[in-house]
Image 1 (cartoon, rainbow, N blue to C red):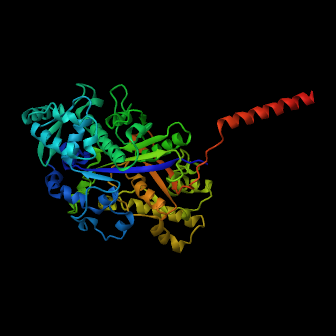
Image 2: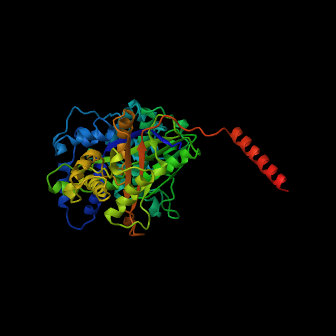
Length: 513
């Protein structure tokens, strides 16, 4: 079968202390309380500087300066192992500071909702125009127009018609509401949507900068974040995908949004694979921006335990899926895993549906997959909050399934986990950790011959939407290319074969008569 391939991946991170304090839901809920918040009082003392965030090993894995195996061999706590020698620029992407990101929010704003203080705007314009990735984005010239006075910004924020934008404790801008009465276009929602759009545009620009793909070559974009844009008559109607493509010069592309909580990236990559294999589109980009609501989500637990607040990073990614080129790792579309509505909700039922069943369909066993990438949340973030080591729990369930199926001995359960597992290194941004952060590393490992295949697993909590008690799970196998893509028969040859068959059929009917 002529499988589609993954040709490239890019990853962006944004250090965002100001957004964390003022727009992360844990903090905004604390602020809404009638009593003074001890958490908000202590929080600033636990925030990291940009250099500290860059030097944090899991963040270095995310952008490709470290491998997951190197992180595995690094003793914990990782935040005590950080180094000032790490770079914000990695093989797969980059970490940028909050001031540059705030400027990017104004650049991607199509309705003049973002206002920046005039001195700040001039300062960040110089940084943006000098940046090799951000300086290439469309509409950088917006940073020449419509600056605001600090007093005017404060008035908009104080009157609750705009959300504040802070950098290093100073009000440097705001995001206005897009409608006086429509809650779907409120200043709060517009800020969240612009954060998602801007960070996704950053990831897409990184993809163009780091790979051979050109903006004009993109045919289709699938956006798979957890935000929803629309108005009061069609909340979540979209379309983030086309708005992001517009900012990055994808003039020949169309696109749409896919949503399924944390599992959405896996769904989107399967959809992209199907479109490429069917020949509908040659070059598809799956991408997602970050979620400001998730910033500092577990910060209360980190502060209580005297730790840094690790959830100060917005995450974003962009992945290029295309037709088989005979070289790039293939997506095995004959082995897609899915948690069906009737699959059951026990851990064993889930793993059977999204791991064992697809392997059975293509004749593989559990240990035939070299690496499993499932819910790659950083355990240094989740363990203090009582959620445990999420990736490790998944690997143990996969290994236990192998024991139950008789594919490995019980005594080898942990050995299998150590072999096909990896530590979590992704920011807890909901959809971002679900398998996709490993795709960049997987491309290198497969192309270099160090592994043959990996399974990317996305899982989602659909019950959070209060529409169902179900959750979700989707998986696919990324595998070394055979180097011989099938070309199929020539159309003229097919027509000739059909004509010959029809003549033979007519002759048979004539002989019988």
